[in-house]
Structures are given as structure tokens and as C-alpha cells.
Amino acid sequence: MGDIKPLVSVVINSFNQSAFLEQTIMSVLDQDYPNVEILLVDGGSTDGSLEIIQRYANRLAWWVSEKDSGQAEGINKGLMRAKGVLAAWLNSDDYYFPGAISRALDCWQNHPEAALIYGDVAAVDERGRVTNRMRTGEWQLAELMEFHILNQPAVFMNRTMLIQAGYLDTEFHYLLDHKLWLGMASQGRMVHVPDVWAAGRFHPGAKNVAAAVRFGEDAYRLVSWMKNTTPYSQLGEGRWNRVEAGAHRINARYLLDGSRASEAFKSYWRGLMAHAPAIVPEWHRMLYALISLAGLGGLKRLFLGLRRLVRPVKMD
View (spheres, helix red, strand yellow):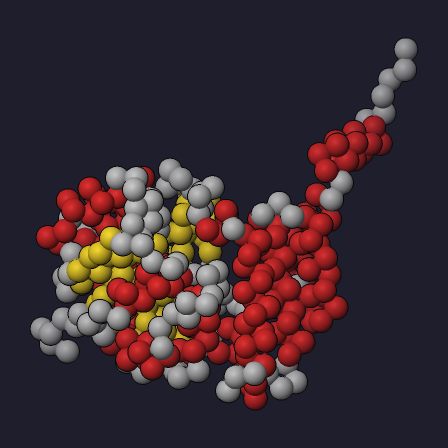
């Protein structure tokens, strides 16, 4: 494309996360790609976020701070104003690593027909310490229907197909991104770049921690929606057991993160009964859920019993 630098739009969605907001903004401003617009949507924060936003206001394409009905409505406000060939959003506790946008743009220039371009994400804690690399695979619509989850901070969307998909569904509050990916992947292919592009922060106030038990509800709603919506209803024929097993897996995963071990194990078991290959890769989490049912006292008794077998207690 010669010297033309296509515009990329990044929406930052914020609500009472002043501890992390500035790092999120700077991670976009410090990218090595020159033609980026930032649209910042704040849900009416009262924690000092507004002062941070005003400090960077002259470097933002647009911003607003007002109450909304939830995350989906807030993000949509920014996405609907976006003008870039690619659009993305960052929640205000996540951030990009250097070079993320330029690598996404390079991929798009090689695959302009792609609906979604996505990389991998590093899980970090409150202090920014990396705790895990959240890897994804070379997935398409069939895998999304089975609840293989993209790591949202590293997803870049073809804005033309985003408009056709109708933006985020405000009726969903937890797997809202996954429903949008399903809509976009039904229009075109997805392209995965196996590099770490962004950090997703896990902390007590994050939705994926504070409301972990609610994600499964959205997963089951999505199964029902797919069964009654074209083209998913046709694509799912002969595969609904795999789709349902994927929903059970997601439900179990989040229940376990929410310290609901008993319910998590039951959900894993239902998944095994529906389609075992969807659950087997998470056998260690299922085992952890089972062991956790005993509680700390049970684990202590198990440990002491095993120790006595290996090293018998001496009797005087």
C-alpha cells in the first residue's frame, strides 16, 4: 500500500479502574504504528479516572464519561464512531505490548478478506507480573461454536464485517465478545498469529474473577441461540453434543475459578457424558475440582495419610 497508513481504531472501555487506566492508554499511544485513533468510553467513573482521561484528552479522537447500561453498550458507543479498517477494544485493566497494532495490520494487509485477526495474550496480575500465556489455536467458526475462546484483548476486527454483524449484543454481559465473534466468523475466515500481543489482567475486581459464575449462563444461552439461528442451526447438525460439551466446559472452568468446586465437577461430568474429547484436555482441572470437594481438612488428612505410608510414624 505504499506510503498510505490505514487507520486502526482502538476503543478503551473504562469504569472505576483508575489504578490501571493510564497504563492502558499509554500502551496504545506508545505503539510503533502511527495512524491509530483512540475512542475512550467511560461509564461515569467516580474514582479519579476522569482526571486521567482529561490529561490525555488532546490525544484521543473522542471520549465520553457517562452512565450506560453495561459493558456492551459502552463499547458499542466507541465502535460505532470508529473509522479504521481494523477495530479493536481494550478494557481499561488490559494493555497492548509493543508492536501489537503494526503486526495486526501486517496480517490484515496479507489477508484483507479476514473477518478477525487474533494473537495470544499474557495473563498478568495486579502488578503486571505474567502468570500464564493464554494460547489459542487455528480456529474457525466450527471451533467457536464449540466454545474455543479467543483472547479478546488480542483480537482485531475487520470493521466492514463488524458493521454487518451488528456490533455487541447488549443482552449478553459475560460472553458478549464470543457472540460477536460467532457473528463475524460466519461472514469470513479468522487468522491467528501465534505471538503475544496483549496482556489480560486478572485481579479481584475483574469481571472474569468477580463474576466468574455467570459466564456459564451466557454459554448455555448461546447454545440455545445457535440452535435457533441460521447458519449455526444447520452447521450444528450432528455436532450439538460437541457444542453442548463445550458449554459445560466453559461453565465448569469459570465455576472453578469462582471457588464453586462441586458445581464445576458436575459440569465437567456433564461435558464428559456429552462429548468426552472436549473435556479430557482439562482432566487436571476436573481432578482439582474433585479433590477440592474434600476441603482443606480433607486434603490435609489425605496428605498425612500418604506421608505415613511412605514414612511410617515411629512409636516409642
